[in-house]
Image 1 (cartoon, rainbow, N blue to C red):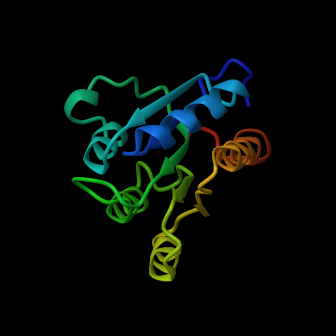
Image 2 (cartoon, rainbow, N blue to C red):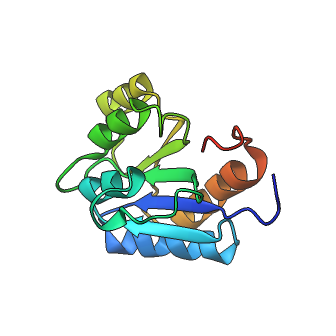
Image 3 (tube, rainbow, N blue to C red):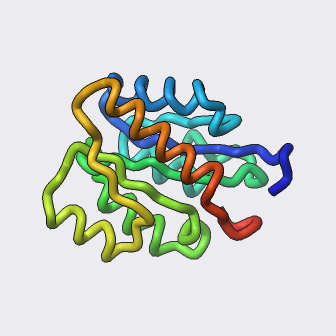
Length: 150
């Protein structure tokens, strides 16, 4: 990987507290040059497919990772996942569900649709920071993605 490559992450999270903790942890460890935060599934789809307010998003800056909540307004995370994994343009972008839902049907449906990982968010602040740090270490440093496809 080119060390000067722009590394971008999309955080899809409607809870401002969880989003702030996640952003802090990612920025503290310099896991990405740019972390984009969107607050619902509709905005996530616009971002991913460069539509609406994101129509001018630079196509040369591809995402390295999507951190996706399930329970969200407008379009839920399962539908966002379905659209991302069902479209050739976004199919290979790694998606990690990071949610408070520990419901088996959500886990099963997420994996059926092609999620790369499913993480249940811890309730405690310190545990959430540790979880995000672990995710960042794995997905940004250890995991390899195909060149030009993420």
